[in-house]
Amino acid sequence: MLIKKNGFILIETLFVLFIMCILFSLSLNLHMPSVSDDFILNEASQFLNEAKLVAMTTKNTVTVNVSDSNLSYTSEDNDNQLTLDEITFETYQFTFNNKGNIKTAKTIKCKINQKSYRFIYQLGSGYFYVQ
Image 1: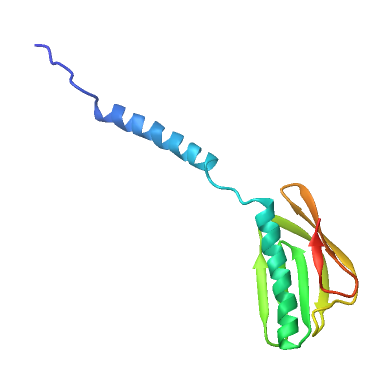
Image 2 (image 1 turned 60 degrees about the vertical axis):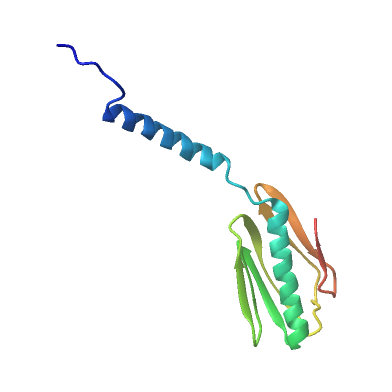
């Protein structure tokens, strides 16, 4: 007596499902959105501008610390920290006075995805641009 085989057995179905899950997980990594360099630079710029505005509005000095992937500022009233995993800064510390100015000119170097960028502060002012 012959038994006709109509369809797949459970092991075959699970094996095909396992392969499909592996292929799906690999393709999911390829389609994940990546953060652009401009977005990361904009985040860091906004944080540094926020530190300057805190100094101007509270009329207190604000100390900014830059190291590795961390940006932080401290004042009498406010403390804030920003961590950006995609960026690497050289270590530096500077201070905004109550008018939002700094005493020295400084270039803060950073790297994002093997590209070098510089935050260039102008002498005597708290203004900077990114190059």
